[in-house]
Image 1: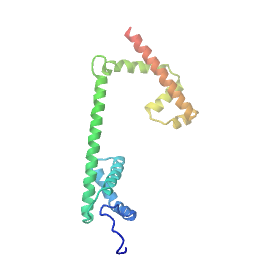
Image 2: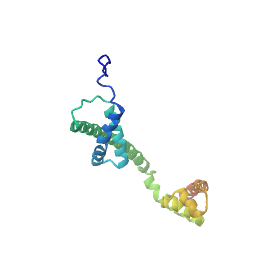
Image 3: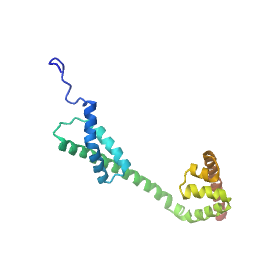
Image 4: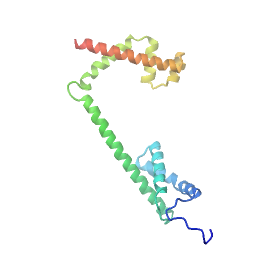
Length: 182
């Protein structure tokens, strides 16, 4: 740097190499810290990235590695707590919506057994191969590719078959419930 060259502003972004070095020095420990807070691996990855983005876009006075890591932990802790608040609000809304569906004399609690009985009856009306497709996809969580291989179908054939089975089962269940109400 020449004497005539202006100095960069104090909040200028650090050079790309120093950013990489900073992230490399702290990422493993910060990820483990997030896991200790209770994040699953995917959430820890996401919050780790968010923490570094926040840290690298904020001014920071270098006071050594221990201070830098303490500062990063504070950013990660706030990100974790904010995510938990958002998750909690979402969970509360979801629970409220589910409660509305289940509550009252006409709620799901009152019709659940009837619907389950109707579903079982409708499943028994299906041919063996259709029951296998339904059981493997919904009961076992098998992929369409796995089912296609087992049943000698294409993946698109399994997809179409599942769509038709769902529509047929829905109609059968509705018909049986209407008959039950009479």
